[in-house]
Length: 119
Image 1: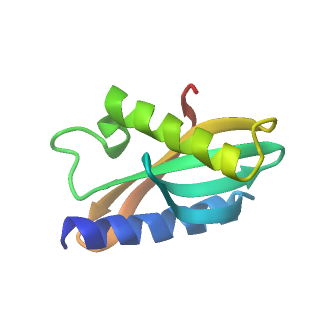
Image 2: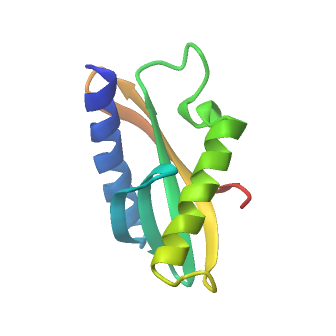
């Protein structure tokens, strides 16, 4: 399975997982000039920006470990742009990560990391 199809499948599974946990999905694949956020959701009173990381092997680390400082900074810029565009700067917000490890075409492990990093 190619990286794009693995990523697309991962994002779909992540959205389903978040819905089961009570999240309300607001936007998927939000794009602006700073980049993209995979999922924007609401969890109780929090606006949640979700990065989905999918891998077919843990040989070089787990999916959630692949969000480096540059990626975090870019995600923060996209989140601020989203909040400004929709006048949501006063809302509590956080960054979550959904980590999905695949075995062939099946998700063998899905983990949610709330407050994966700080804004």
